[in-house]
Image (cartoon, rainbow, N blue to C red; front, side, top):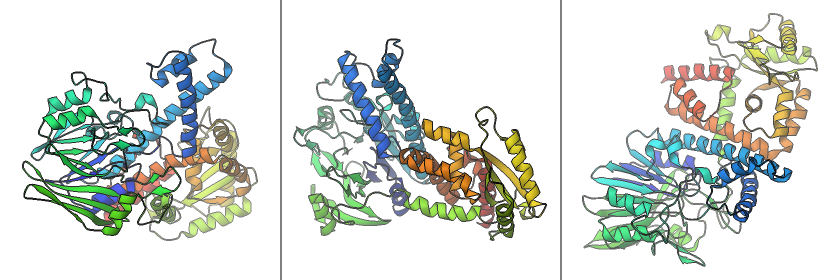
Amino acid sequence: MRLIYVADVHGAFERVKQLLAETDADVYIIAGDLVDISFHTSRTAGRYHDLQTYFHGLRRGRGKSSLVLEDFVDELLEDPRLSGEIMEKGVLYRQETLHARRVLRQNYRVLENTISLERQSRIFCLPGNHDMDLRYTALRDRDLHLSCHKAGHCRIAGYGGAGGQTPGIPERYVVKYRAGTGINEDTNEMYRFFKEAQPHIIVSHHPAYGIHDFLSPMGETGSLALRRYCERHPVLLCLTGHLHDQWGMEEADGTVYLNPSHFGQIARPGGGVAEGGFFYDVEIGVDRVARIRHRKLVEGTIHDVVAYDRTGGQWEQVVVDRGRYESLLTGRNYETGKNGKPRVAADELQRDLHRLYGLFQKSPLGEKTSAMETAVRLLDAGLPEDFAVDVMAGSGENGPSDAGVDIVLYIRCGLAEEVPCLSEKVATCSRCFQAREKINEIMGGKVVHTIVDCIDLNRVEQSIRERNYDCQITQRFICYRSMCLLVNESLIVPVERRLAADEEFRREIEGNINSYFSILMNTVRHERSFQKYESRLKAIGITIPEPISRKLKVYLADESKNE
């Protein structure tokens, strides 16, 4: 059996996709930390951590340390004597905790969407201390925590999480680590689970005591329960992570211990990033580990770094790539220099967006549409100053002849919270009705057009002021603005300036949309079912704007015909 093991992914889902494309294994184990932070921006995560620290202090001061922090805050907010400052912080903490949960679930949905495309291999995931409990995510069926699976002739079992508190991760959603020092074997959750499961292969985010577990200045910080279990039972392989610099291969009492170092990029304490990309490629025989390759993925290319072969009962180590090995040994980057390059996870996404942008500027036949050019020229000449429009190529639901253009209206009415400005393409507020009639007059029958959406700019500005990440109107606004042609930008400029001024809020909103496009681009490459794509988005709380939905549906259908 061939097994590939990666640990500490830290959000490098594009690398996971490359790994699956460039390798062929019977089993893949993708272990935590799967995500890096609970938000789309480090600034939001930092602000959340500040709130956590504040309420940690209050909880300790009030003798409530046994309560989960989020439960403590909920209890506080029920106190009618609570001061205004604490009330304000508590409401914000509760709001941001729910936002963190949504972002985490989006990230796991993106990862599941990526790995589900590999249908020939078994793929399992294990949460780390940066992760939420995977039972409540799209990865639930792959979750190894407190779970045992049969793969070939081996039983594989896992125990996730790690000791201590991880800043910026809501306590309510993390895996509870009940395998620490001071817990005897009879009550140690990890030990009891492994004793019952009797696995041949163990996956644990936290390392075993005395092996790959040194943390300065504390010394050896690994799990005694894990080490004791492996000493007393026939475990072939123990796969761990967590401590990125404690990588390596070691055999003790018949068990091979592996920590590959981090697969994703991570921030260095003194600045810069460590590039990562490391994983283990393991060949397992009937009753022993036969061969191990420590490898590195670099821009879609795999490099062997160290080879381990069993010869006469002993392991022989051969350094295959001296440069990459010594860089890992000394904690230096090999591919990107001393400090590395900051992670730009959106690079691939930006290319996809550029491709998708072309889709919205072309007719269903893939040609630049003269209808769009005519529509923009007419609207630019005749549009009044009190509303603006975005223009995209029509969806052509009934064939290319009726494609024309689709138009999104931007108005100010303040009614969108109570009733949508547009329902089933029929104007339901007077401002929207007036704008629609004016557009019909401007077009004068020269261009087939459909008013597909109406955005109330007052509501967009309100959501920015209130920092409402989940406002569907604002998400639609940003989505349209990323891919359509604008007419009468003077009405839009103040809103876009306000959005640009709150970079943290804008990037959190864009993070939601990035999840949307990440799933989209995986789907259009491998899965021609629009219904499956749409259901995946709805599962993480993302609603596709109707005109974009129609356009994508036609696009996916056309792509399917061309295959």
